[in-house]
Image (cartoon, rainbow, N blue to C red):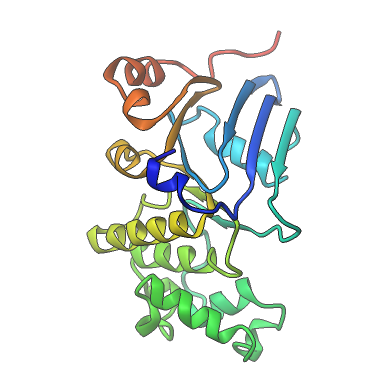
Length: 248
């Protein structure tokens, strides 16, 4: 963790992955994955496609069965997890506006009844933080990929998370969107939010992460960015064939 992060009170949980194994069919996806995520830190996971990064996130979110122990140490009784997926799959012909999407994701009231008065201020603030407040009446299908990604970031802010899980959030962003994301990441760090961040942009990871785990079925390294993202370690990480092992 950076020196600045050490001075900030962590409001997010500590995460412990201990001996996580995951097998789908006859293929071992994860093998004895063990590392920890410090509370209030920005912790990046990097590795090749098919290396198990998204599968590990799904185990954390309770979406995939696994063996081993996964523990979240929450600092208080409030336990709020936000999740921003890599992409949004939907019928682009649907007449669903940004407001409709936010209502469907962020409130219990049916979306066709519009935004509730209780949730609207939070939705307004979230859309403003990602620069999409002026496009709230546009159809989701008419937005660019980067604009849709900003909306996904906005829904991950409601309610304000203590743990935020990001699956390649920069993949569709343009330069303006990347600046927005960097501002958000800075804000989460200042708030003491624990951020678990899958990312392929290694330069961004080097600049903004507190710690980096290299994952290709197994953990190949776990260290601060300057020590983790060396040419030797990256060569070893991205030259591994993560799907080469099947169960006999």
